[in-house]
Length: 197
Image 1 (cartoon, one colour):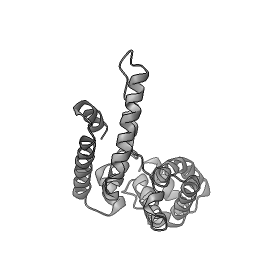
Image 2: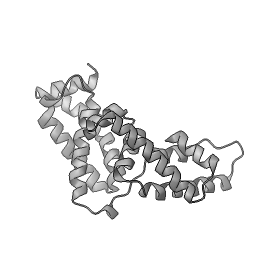
Image 3: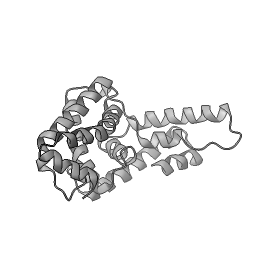
Image 4: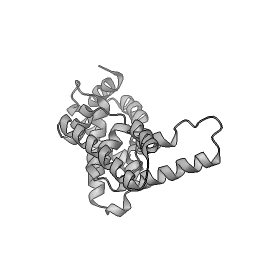
């Protein structure tokens, strides 16, 4: 049993110190998870706290054979869905790890301002293209690249089969490539994106 699973077991027994440690471990990660989805600092903090309250209340339901992060983020994902139902689509903006991967691509030695401007333009194309993905496809990309979750973990969190996760990822990448190609992006730019995605 890993440390986080052990902490959850102790939380189930009412150990407040274990909960505080788990809170310190997960509060920043949950905050980032919610921020990427809501772009609202207050909502992110509130959703993080609500998630951790549920962790405290439901820790006895944790299956010791599962990963603690999958269980906690599953709770967080359900809290996010509740929040999402209360807000319009236009209030939600997303950024995936795939975007950040392109942001931090190593520059060639001697690459100057024009190269940086090129990367900024590329990032804007990606942001716009991501908005054209379905929520299902965008979410799978985020959970894979931002949270570093496996397809199996994503399937547990979303309550779908791992094959469905793989299928959604395949179509998300394909759709993203098509959108970017239609906007005039060429092979080397798409290759950079595909390496991040």
